[in-house]
Image 1 (cartoon, rainbow, N blue to C red):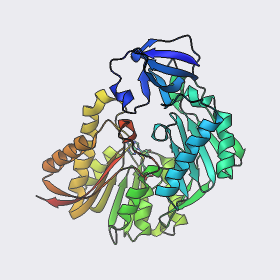
Image 2 (image 1 turned 135 degrees about the vertical axis):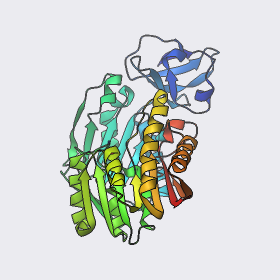
Image 3 (image 1 turned 30 degrees about the horizontal axis):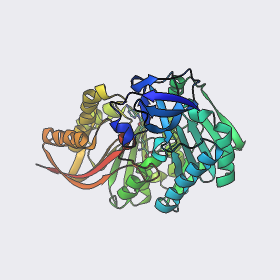
Length: 391
Ligand code: SAH
């Protein structure tokens, strides 16, 4: 195994358990191939760990182990087993879930999701890519899947010098897969949909909403295929309007509304969420419940202020459009928008809207997307539920 030497200063984060080593932290490295396994020492000869190196990437090394152990099939079997045990213990009895969540499970660059026996994986690092065939075999042996689909057509693979491709690698992945979550049925297209087909990470928050919607009029803004809207309708909401910029997502939403027998209470509108909130509020439209689950407004730290402006705009409008005592469910999936920052922005929005907000629930991603305090990036989803009253 080739040896890489790191500067001793600035290693605190890594020594506390973060797996990333930046190019600027490397003092000395032999010539290496992207994805090669290396042995990592500090310049004081202290052993740090073993990991993948990719000289093309700003995050040059991702550690896999703090032990001096071989990275082979047995290693991946051990990691998969740990990830499986965690889900069996903490996320039992669901049909759709994330079995492997990259750094959260000590496998940087591997995502593995299941939809009722059908598996989808994504690989974002050159290191994991080298073990693709091994991993497919392990998935077959461990999960006995009906099918496995490789969804590796996302742009960030370019950073690691990996080709963009997708396709079936085992069995047959049907064009529509159906799952049930908390008594609500969802059909999805894993090949064309966002992520691996569904926003699994909002499962707990959709469930929490279900107990708060009886006879309510609901607006689900940035709805995708209607996750929150359908959960609400299935649990007694009077009606729901799903809004998304993607017509395709809404078509799946409609299909799901039919699947759940709630089409008579479902409405959808293809629109830019910002414009629609503005228009509806100018028309004086009111709702009992508004859900705001937009895409991340920033993927970079230096754009946080601008992103906060965007979040504030939609939240302020939503607060004004709620009936007295109505419910705001508001989320951000940007790890750069820390919880306190998000909450502070929401407080400012409420002041500007002349409202008082009372927190009902503070949620995050489900336990199949584990949060490791040593890796702050693993804590990305924040979801607040507020009752909104006039000041
Ligand atoms: N709540 C959903 C997930 C929402 S993901 C669920 O539980 O399944 C965010 C959605 O916002 C995506 O579907 C995306 O198409 C949509 N979107 C992105 N920009 C938008 C915009 N400007 N206006 C409306 N929708 C937008």
